[in-house]
Image 1 (cartoon, rainbow, N blue to C red):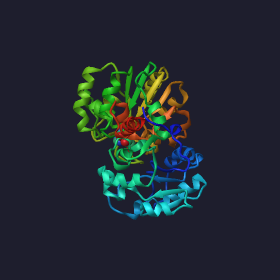
Image 2: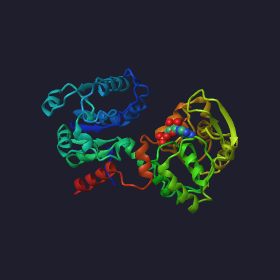
Image 3: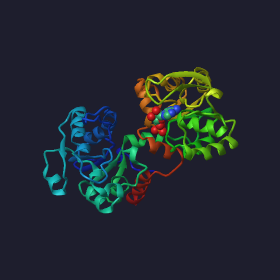
Image 4: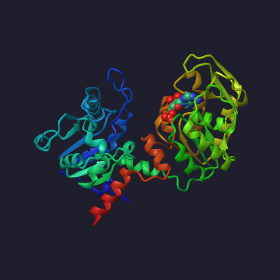
Length: 390
Ligand code: AMP
């Protein structure tokens, strides 16, 4: 239980809002996808509708590692935010309480990158207290960092009455897979080894767990199927062997694969049965028989959770498996939950976002949440509720 926006009266108050404006930028600093800024607008508009004295918006951007670095400045982000919000926005590079309070005509202020201060990532109490001193109330709406014990995540709620924004509320509601309607199918792909815990948790609940990406390669290797020069994850190999023993009937392996002779967009390719992956070749996507198998299973599901692409979807030649899975989810009637990160990016690439039940705004955070871990950002809001409720 935590406070939400409707519990607070923001009238004439100074409100600190922690958002996730960590948008991707190209090498010249142009924003290549502003959806994170767009997603934060409903919460900010809800606060603004209640006539606050000042709304102070703060976020991190990239990994400046505690040092001021103009490459990671929030200034261009504040500019895009201003355009999208349609209201004047003041950018403050060096916030001090007196300075902010003197900005009486500036209703909306964006602070410089929180991670320019080493105190942010260190979860420093003094830095949190300084941020809290700018406001009367705190709104936390950065689900993407809710799994980090950073100053603006867990520190500020120690000093200010705090509530969850709309994104937080929706994430918690939509990622709840405690009692999923059956059949429940999970699709786990991608390359990072951060999916072991979520697989362990999900295996107890799913009817089938469909494999994709580097994870599928790792499971094939663990099963003893040759994978040529395909990428696999050493750390996950032992776990994969264990899972194959324990939950063989639930794991769905690829039947065929599209191979590349190197890791590039224009690699030579060939389609083979999964037993016939040759030395020197790399599995970069699933083949048509696997697409049909995965589709037929997914079409029967009532709940589907998907994290991690099925193949190297960034290369068009190897994007078919990921695209077909995305299309199947868009067309099916199941509740479809996407664990953010690259599977979310793939769905957006095919303009299918609006046809999913929920695409999480946090890759790592959504995996930790579904694994059943307590996210520090949520715990901080719950503790704050207990403290202020009295
Ligand atoms: P993750 O962040 O763990 O979800 O991993 C996403 C990345 O996995 C994407 O950049 C994909 O290109 C990559 N990926 C998916 N399948 C493969 C594969 N078979 N070989 C190498 N990389 C892959």
